[in-house]
Length: 348
Image (cartoon, rainbow, N blue to C red; front, top):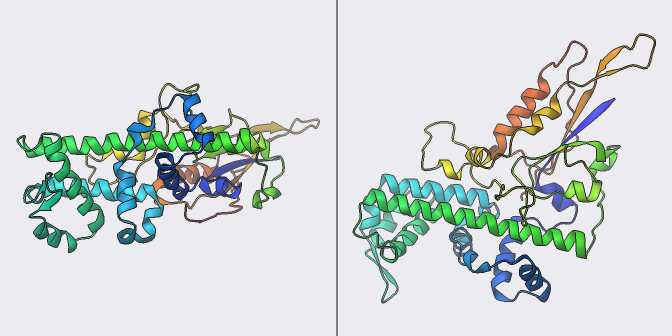
C-alpha cells in the first residue's frame, strides 16, 4: 500500500485551465477600474466590496511603470516585492540621497534629482530604487514628513509600503475569489488531463497546497482535513478565519536579518497568520497489519508528487523540511520512499 502526498504550486491551477497567473491578476486590476462587466459589478455588490482603497497600489504601479526596465522579472510579483523592500533598506542606509532632491507639486516636476539618478544608475536594482526615491519625494510633503527626523520619516515610509502590501494581498484575494465564482459556479469547469492521471485514487491524497485556491477539492474531491494551505487560502466571507490568512512576500533572509524586512518575509507572515505545520503529519509513520494469522505489521510507504511548483528558493524552508521528513527512517520496517512524479518549472 502506498500513500500519496501531493505538493502543488500554481502550475497545477493553470494546468486545470484556471486564470491564476500573476499576469491575469495584473490585467484584472486594470479591468476593475476601467470597464468592469455586469457580472463583476454584481459580484462586488453582493460581497459588499468597496474597491476604492485598492486603487493606485504602489506595487502594481511600479510594475506598470517599469516593465521595460524590469524585463521578464515583472512576471513574478514576489520578486518585485523583494526588489522594492531592498530599495527601501538601501535608502535607510543612504538617507542623504532622499534629501538632495524634492518634488515640485505646483509644476509636478522633480527638482535636483539628476545627480541622485546618476548615482543610482551605477548600482543594481536601479528601477526599484528610482521608484522608491520618487515615491518618497511625493509622500514627504503630502504626509508632512519634511520637518520630522529622517529616521522617523523613513520608518513611516516603510509602513506605507507594508500597508500597501496588505492591500495588494486583499486585492489578490478578491481576484481569486471572483475566479472561483466564475470557474465553479458559472462555468463549472472540469478536470483537464495531466501527468497526475496516472495516480490512482487521487481524491485520497494528502495535499500540501502552495496555492490560495482549493482546486483539488472542487475537481478531485480531496479532503479538507488532509489539505494544508501552507500559504493560507482565499476566504472572502471570513467563514474559516477572522483574518486574511494569505501569505505573500519575500524569501526569508538567513543572514543579517533586518527587522524592517521581517513584515515582508513569508516565514513571519506564516507565524502571524497561523498557517501552521499540519503538512508534517502527512509524513508520519502509518502502521497497518497484514490480514494473516500473525497480523504482520508493515509500514505504509509514501509517494511524494510535486506538480506545478518551480521549487523556488522563496519556499526553500518548506521543501527542506519535506525532504528532511521524507528521507528519515520512520520505523524498523520500511523507510518512507519518495517518488518525484513530475516537476513543472513553468514561470508563474
